[in-house]
Amino acid sequence: MEQSFDKKTKHRTVSYAKWGYIFIASFFIVYLLFTLIPQVVTIVDSFKNFIPQDGNILDFEPYFCGFDNYVAIFQANDRGEIAVFKNLGNTLIMWVMGAIPQLLVSLLLALIFTASKLKLKLSSFFKTLFYMPNLIMASAFAALFLVLFSTIGPFHKMFEDAGLIASNFDFISNATWARILVATMNFLMWFGNTTILLMAGIQSIDDSIFESAKIDGASSPRILFDITLPLLKPTVVYVIITSMIGGLQMFDVPQVLTGKAQNNDTKTMVMLINQYISSNNYGYAGAVSVILFIITGILSIFVFKSINKKED
Image (cartoon, rainbow, N blue to C red; front, side, top):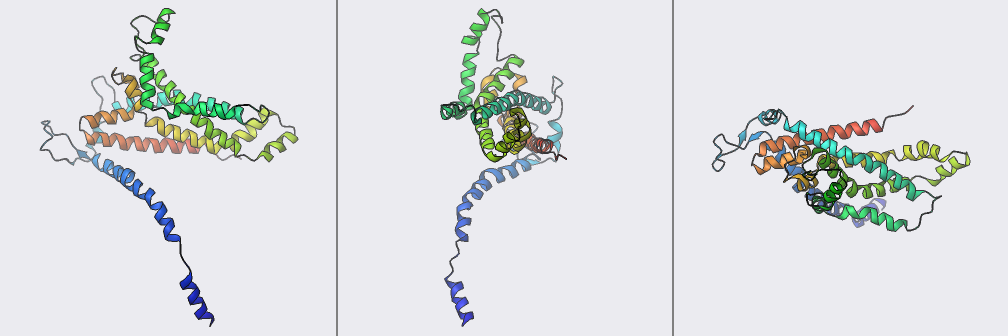
């Protein structure tokens, strides 16, 4: 009797596990079609030659060329520069110029808005205000800066009247100023998002820890450096790595701001990839993409390991 009852019970049991797989299937389908397959195709294309010697690509069939594309992109150009190293340096410089103030300002704002002593009013309004630049399209943001800092723009006129620049000075063509403008735009667009992430990280820390520290007589700086920042480390690691990945993929802001000026000092890795794609040289573009992927992975591991060092 017990065995027959168990069999009936098993038959009556309804399994809902399949619905879980159905609900998450959309993510894997989208990832497969728009991420994994393009990645595999890019890696395969990086080992192919798409440009014939005579320049006629109509009847040309791409063929496997091994590591020739990787060797070619590391060759020096007419100016004695290796484009991959030059563009990688530009990308890292502009990312660091924007990421350091972004992290510091965001951390300061997060500490201010989460401080119980200050009891700031209209905090929700300021959070929304800080986040709003992130909602603006990067290309539109860059177009605005292009107008403001052009040779007939208001900032050019203001600096010229103050005697700080000459009348023929061009912010967009100048290497230092162009990099500063790109870094400034990246800072303005992303510091609000970083502030909200850091605030969430601080608010996730148990209040009892802060209360215990205050009862033990710990000062505010001691609480900050011995409790808040160490416990905020996972959020900081996430912010730095995602910021770095976004920085290495920088394209729209420098392209819109300095694309027409042909400023070689603001040319990024993705702009180099786009240049090869525009000339139908998909092999070089794929090779640079693979190198960028490897560099991103190495830097991400380095940042993760250096910040998450085990302490005695």
